[in-house]
Image 1 (cartoon, rainbow, N blue to C red):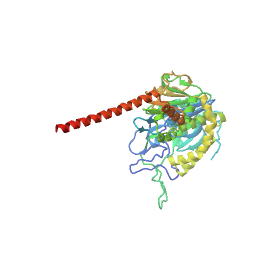
Image 2 (image 1 turned 90 degrees about the horizontal axis):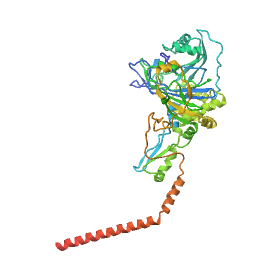
Image 3 (image 1 turned 90 degrees about the vertical axis):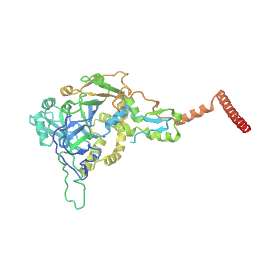
Length: 504
């Protein structure tokens, strides 16, 4: 992936980004805030997180890049061995994948009476254009497919040369970055295709309807900038071997720490990356448990029997995994369903893109629109997940985290072989995927799975009714002694007061 250096701004519809008096735009949950003022050229910021799925010749490559810099310098160029199917992924996808590996805990503090609550948190089959096997001329570019996906305009391209690719991108508003010729030529020789991406952004103030309004102005002020993460995207394609196309990312300015979540049929590592970069591995069976069973319950200062009735009633909602890792569950199941069905783009994924494109034409973005889309697609997605999730038990998820050397990324695509990491390192105490650092030893007692509260109450009752006779006698004796002590104290006080009166 590489950030390009020029794009054409396009506004569609009547509701988009709003520039306030402070010249800061409402991101609407889709793109980072917009600012104005002097800025540096585009560069990557934050963690580069990548989701990769591979099984039986089908691969998914998912990203949500973060960057800062001028709005009109953002775009992406990603090479693929074959034309991919495109889809929008949930913006929280990487948080949900992390929570699928290390689910967040619901913590109850008993002794301190401190209650910590969990975070609230148009069907059309895709027409895949078969690439023409004939070689392209040096100066030719073949447009395999063009489509809009949410806030992005996307073109899938084949090129006869890097120069031809550059000319096409310049002509159509996708600026080809300098310094990539040699690497792109190698991809051209290997008959790979390229996915070029540019954004569609504009200001809200200039297009909001007003009385007597006759025209609109969607142009952003000069010097407008982004700072943050943009919409997550997924690319599903066919390939004979697992390959992560990250060579072009070596040309990005900024940080190069990469985290790769690799869902495959066995634990993996890359021969190009030190094995210490493999920080976690988890079986498919454990993933199924983590995304379908209640979140872990941690009790500090007591046990299950010490949790009061009113607190028990809130736990089922708090321990529901859906708001925390449901997006990861859906992504895993959808990829597995794509393999079993032989369709690179599933019906519910195409329906979502149709809804997104309708929203874009009307200028509708934001969490409210996303919620309406989710409500419409929930039933179909639920059926798809149910039919494929069981296949997850055959898979394994590997997490790779480290500063990938630029020279390694630029030289060749990442390839992976089988590798099982040492058990002593493969635990949250050493690396918690949610926080990206060691979790350390936690206080209290951890409970997993459902809790049978009737059994807990029966155990409490049984413990109270079978209190040993000897203990009951001892308690009675202690009570008698305490009563006698009180009587002796009262008698002493009375005698003391009587002596004082006589002395007076």
